[in-house]
Image 1 (spheres, rainbow, N blue to C red):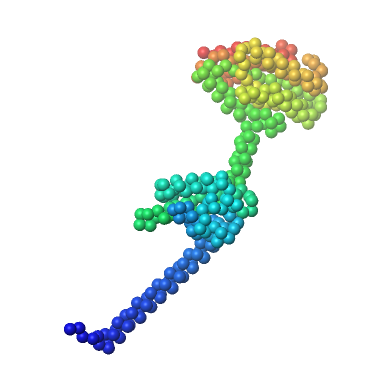
Image 2: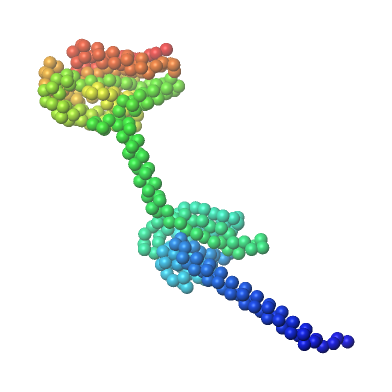
Length: 342
C-alpha cells in the first residue's frame, strides 16, 4: 500500500518543478533572443536573401530582397511563388529562376551562377546567386539564396579590359602614323614565314621608302614632314585593309607591307597601283628630280618557299636590297623578285 508523500517530498517536487520551469523560461528567452537576433541580422545584411520551400513558395526574405529587388513589402512576397508575382518578376525571368531551382532540388547541394536582374528601380544589374538546399534529417525542405551585386565589379573589370586592350594596341602601334610598329612587324613577319614553311602559304613583302624625304624635311620643316607621313600612312592603311594585310612604319620614312595574293603578277600590279596612288596624293616635293610630288621607291619580294631554319633577317635583307636597287635605278618604281630559300 502506497503511503502519501511527506511534506518534505512534496516540497522537493515543487522545487524541482520550479527549477524546470525556470530552465524552460530561460530557454524560451534564449530562443526569443536568438530568433530576434537572427531576424535582425537577416534584415540588416545588405545582400538580398530569401528562403523558399520545396514547392518554390517564398517563406522568408530580408528587407534588401523586398526593397531592392522586387520593390514591394515582404508581406506581398511571403506565401507566393515566382509566377504569382508577375508585376515584379516578368515571366521570362521567372522561367530562368524556376529552372535553376529545380536543378538544385533534383540534385541537393550548392549552386552558383551569375545573372542579370531587373531591380525595383528599373535598372538591370549583374548579380551572383549563391544558393543551397535546406536539408533536415535527410529530407529537402527548401532552399536558401543569397544575392551579391557585382555590377560595379564587372564595370571595373570591363574598364580594365578596355585599358589593357588600349595598352596592348599602343605597344604595337607607331604613335605618329597609327600604323603597326617595327616590334610588331618582327612578330608578324616571323609568324608568316613559319606558316610559309608549314602550310606553303605564299605571301608578299614590300619595303617602301619615300623618295628624297630628307630634302622635304629640310625644305618645309619637320612638322610638315610629319603631316606628309600621316597622309601617306592613311593611304597605305586604306589600301591594305583586308584581314591578312599588314602595314608597318619601320622607321623614319620607311614602311613595310605584308599581304597575300594569288601570284607574283598580282602582287606587282597591287604595289604599282599603290605607288601611283602615293604620287596622286600630290604632296608637293622639294626635290623635283623624280617628280614634282612626293613618290615612293619599292622593293617587293614574293615569298614562295622558305625552310624553317632560315633567319628572317636574311629575307629582310633580300627585300632591302631590292629597295636599294629601286632607288639606285632612278626611284619612283618597284623592283620585285620571287624569293626562295631552300
